[in-house]
Image (cartoon, rainbow, N blue to C red; front, side):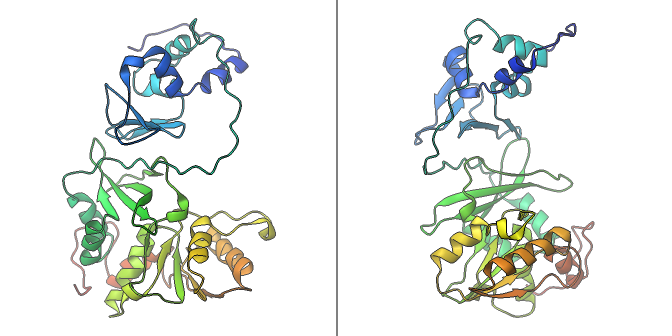
Amino acid sequence: MRTRRPYVQIDPDELERIRQIDLLTYLRRFESDNLQKVKGTTNVYCTVDHDSLKISNGKWFWWSQGIGGYSALDYLIKVRDYSFMEAVEILTGKELSDWTPPPPKAEKDEPKVLLLPPKYQDSSRVTQYLFGRGIDYQIIQECIADGLIFESSGRYHNAVFVGKDETGTPKYAAYRGLGSSTFKGDASGSDKRYSFRLLAREPCQSVHLFEAAIDLLSYATFLKCEEKDYKAENLLSLSGVYQPKKEIKDSKVPIALSTFLEKNPHIKTIYLHLDNDKTGRLCTKTLKELLGNDYEIVDDPPPVGKDFNDFLLSYLGISRQNNARERRDAR
């Protein structure tokens, strides 16, 4: 569908207007027969042509192909395979020539709709990937059985880490490419208050904090290898790197941690297992200053390597490059 076109200069203001045309507006006006609401939802749509292309919260994602975007321009280029200029011409057509972005809506505390990717028929790839990263096989299988980890279907098979609220309802999902893929992202509608976590079976007065799900799982594996009960601990991930402000006094506690502490007022001690890099050390310093008056803060970074997965691999005597190597941890 892409054709060679002569170079045409586009007015920057016009281009910015085009970029703000959202996909739902475009489909309703130009491809109404190709738009349908996802059953059981109030504001989630998909296309008739591609039922795995979901539209919600001002974004769209084509799960079977692992691509997404925000605007109609993104859709026309990535999904319909138009060139940039062809897409621009479509969006400057007669009906949309006078389109202006709607005024910004007042912020409402409306619940987000989480768009989980479709599950693959099994989780063999994600199991192999995590096992190769040193994670205990039984821990992996328990997380899969509990719906906390699964493998997405489609062209790209990603590991999906799910965070649930107090009722057990999925509220957050992070996906990570398997094997050599470095792809990372959050599912549309993810609520970062409910990041990936493994909670103690009985109430306890401490919580262990990690930057990522794999670091959390690595620590759980380490505890098991040391013949300690990881299910007696609260393990909480931050769903990515926490970025403090330049001035610590202007920083806020990560929302996943602040929500957990608010809902668990009996917590007295916070163990920080953040990375051994500049950012991780800054995050630790910031959290100690922000929370040190109310909690006992224990700085416990990985003894070896950048993160706890590096430490686990060193502890188990395996290389990250060799995912199939047998390990000496007890099962």
